[in-house]
Image 1 (spheres, rainbow, N blue to C red):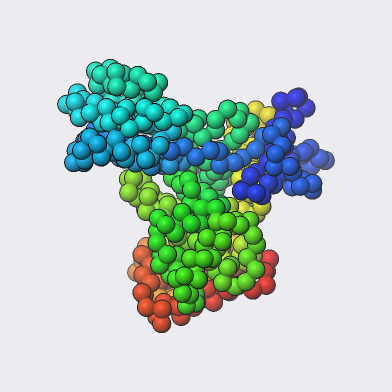
Image 2: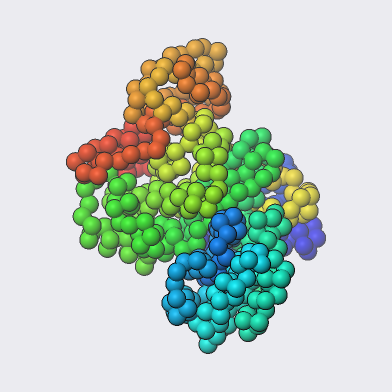
Length: 500
């Protein structure tokens, strides 16, 4: 094995204070992936690692062009950038108000969407406000400009102090890739051994789609990041990466964005707001603490619910095909939400937050093994690395073990299940969530609905969801708590002793 190959043979996956080291080695039956027995040193930078990278605060100065605005939103969402302020040329703010907003935001990177020549004067005025508000900032932010060539030339004057970079129009494929790459470059900094978690998740989604020959969705909820990555069978990847929200250090930010009531609605018991808020901030201060009681575990599950719901809302606002996300045939849950004690707890997060609309297999990662495979693929793409890295495809296939096969009915119907050549008719009532104990391959259909599909069940069997979409939760605790508790109980997801 060459020196380069040995460098790729070990990879650390970092989640807050957790560092998991994964190694691949050649044995009598070929290459295999295994967890290192020794606890890695978090300060060790000699081993390549998958991590979130640094946070990059981005301010956007935009021309009054809805198409350009939407393209930039999709690019920054794919890049995992922290969008601190978004100023439009027609937002009605005064020059002083714009300068003050930018000064308070203290951006690391400013993206200027110049548009066409008719927007030039208004965009130049935005850039003058930026110069007024951020000239004394240290370190000085960088400026990235897109738009018509004549417009970008005019912007060099007010932006000269900030080091202007010109990128292609983000509405084009190359412009989208350039914007994503530039923001990720800021997050990576000078660390050449770092594989951003975003990149590992996108490689993983592509590998799952290739292995299943069907669209795949990776839903990741870590300590301070949340992501949704959809990969089509042809290799097309669409991603939404949110920085700063999660179930650990990002818990307080999530509650600040979404509101305490949106998190509380997923907890199957009555909880007073002050007590719950204290627990949220404890999660942010001690993010790696293991849930020691039922309420703490319920809170972690509720935070994961809301983090994914928030990611879906942001993706829809940016114009991403959220309906396509929900039709994925394979849904993989990764991160902290995948390491919950019970299989059913992870499954319930997927069902409630993503709300699949097609027959799909749901699986979960354990100890970041699948994320490590994605990171290895980023480190050695294509046929590079030991044995051409072709073993990774087999490793993904071996670890693509479903928790359950999910059949979203959305209404009352008679579900026809063919298992081992025997037909079974299951009457499903509207509003119910049922776990049926079928094993192995099954074929599904339901008269009067579009539900058709086949797949392999897992340890949780076949799960039929007839609750409808979107899920609507009552606002009154007297109605909400029994409903949410009933959903948990129907899958055996209530906190308690873990089962394999």
